[in-house]
Length: 308
Image (cartoon, rainbow, N blue to C red; front, side, top):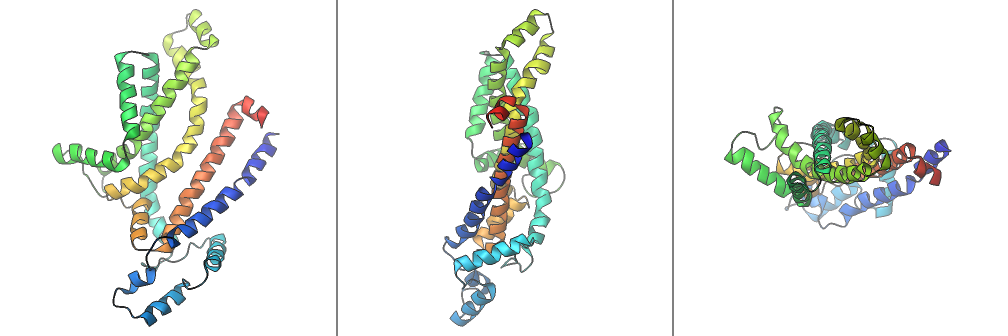
């Protein structure tokens, strides 16, 4: 039954991925601007523009361009950058490691601090510590990445001068962008952990464990946290597309040479193949992350599996 459920859910991915591909392809064509004009400059003649559009295939109907694009994707070809004139896969490959380093660090920070603060807040319910953590969590959940990044740059880079504010380099260059990307996620995980812990701590088996004289630390970390983590495990996958989406803004603010900054540059340059590839990758990651979250929750929670 479990295998059939996974197969059924896997095939349900096809329609969302198709929608993502259509959206990725169509989005850039709806934005005003001419890639041929950007490449050749303002002094290009109409004949030169028409010739370049023909060479790039931009004069063909959109559905023909879409089918051609999908055929290339099926062979692992993301196309060629209109501006750099190199394969899009090479551009992404050169930037991917920076994005993975940034999002991976932010992900680790989010789970370490988020769960820790959530446990403290739950075990200190209605105390000043609980109110303080809750207030900070709401604050960081509400902050846009660009504003948060600028504030961290101003405080730790300009005022205190203890951390670099832009570009790659040593591990210190990673701190500010990683916390910019990770702080909102820390806040979300802290709130989720607190809510789940409070719910679990009221269960009868927790009361029984305390009545048996088990140490509070054992009750909290072995019994309560273990069951409170079930919903959090699913969020572990759902968090992935949020991190990649937030990296677009964060990398731009900190001049971090990842996929996000490449996407912004490609948008301004009307470099269709690059934008289409990155949007498709992020969109597909979102669909896959939801699939993995759904499957994981189904596996670890028998009640959901029985309903599936």
